[in-house]
Length: 115
Image (cartoon, rainbow, N blue to C red; front, side, top):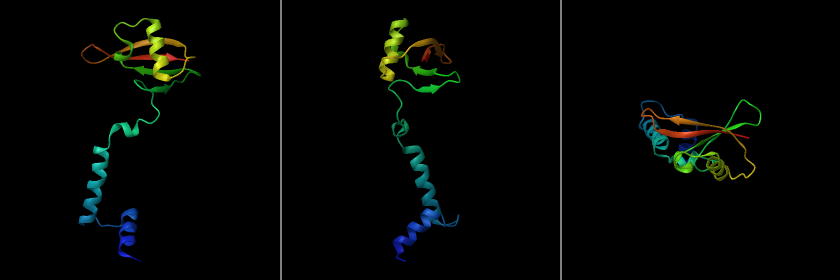
């Protein structure tokens, strides 16, 4: 077996002892990946400005929208427009809108129940 294949096999099977420099290098590489990987790599299919969460009720989803999307003191139509933009769906029906506030009392997000 060539030296390169042996090294790859040892890395994949994690066969280096704890007190070796190879073990330390592998740990540093893993930590670098965890802390230096951009968050956007893991956002997947999340709509812009919000996150969809399945609710326990059948057919109801929760959407979190940033206040910047809906503007200040949004009315029902502004919420519906924001939901349509965030989800990309025109057939969305808004059921309930709740304000989520941070520790200082400012609105951090709007939680919207949609169908």
